[in-house]
Length: 296
Image 1 (tube, rainbow, N blue to C red):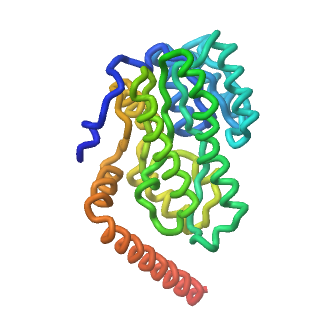
Image 2: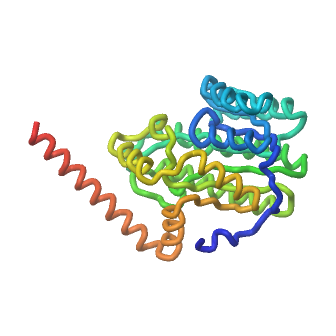
């Protein structure tokens, strides 16, 4: 749809079948769904997460049906040394480089304008959402190059191009992941290494609960997840299938495709509309708060 399916292919074989994979943020949400689906396809997965207990629970879910196909590893992707340790662990576990790296770990952020976000929030969100993916790509890319094959799946967001107001830090990090992935796809275009970037809208995960989000923004996100959000399992299957078919961009939902299409056809008008919507939402919130105070 909208020409996305016609982007260059990096090969058509089933790369995600019997893969040796590293998945970050595998303790919950999309990361756990990726790990479970890769194991279901006959693969072996290192489930990395900053919360080792969550990673262990994911491994337990995999081991019920696929004994010996999963390992847990505690890893803060914002810490370069930790990601280097993860790479060494993967090489030892797989007796060589992994065939698939899924850079999924991320945290949510929203409801704060630029200038009101605060540098602590910028540093934390950039550290996980952007540096986490940079670390995963920069450290694992030489290993996959040396093997002469493999793939990367980087998890961005429709926020990368949707650029909704009040989400400056989140938008910037996901735009960085999108740009990085497109750059890597070009750099690996003469190799047997595929790159896929996932850009969903709402997915039913705990990214909001674990993130840095105002109450109002969290309520909007929760409604979006509840009313139109895809399940993590569905998103993981769609993305892995797309990777098998050599697709670079994966926009699983219709609204993500619509935003992509409209933004590129009418960039100035799109930006004006987003600003208008922000002001309307703020006005509605203000009126609701005033009514609530009057009732009290």
